[in-house]
Image (cartoon, helix red, strand yellow):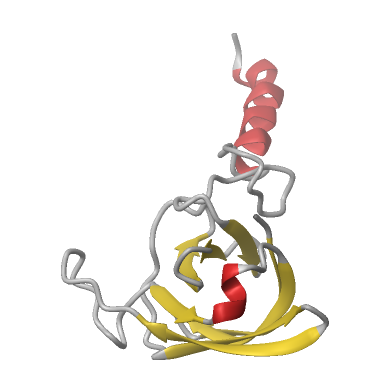
Length: 154
């Protein structure tokens, strides 16, 4: 096959490869026409144009909400310098601020100020399975995402 006949095929294949990621997973989704699997079975919230994800995980028995910072494919944890992340939830018709604090993990070497996990506890989390809210601000590698709309699903 000569080069000029193969050129349209090569251009088409290149376009397919560059069109976007092809990762797939469960219906826990980020945008872009495809889905990613949340590593802890939580709710994924896409940040930026497929740059990062937040995974929201509720532990009903403990009344705990955890947030994990993940890469754009929800495959790798992204450590950040923050010591806390504020979430303002709307539950039971009331505004319920939560301050999630950084979690150290000796098994992964994560420390306060260099971690991907944040958590808070509140009694109302024991009985509230779903709620909308906002992450007021999170700085990931120098990009600050402000007033990020969230919706925690069961």
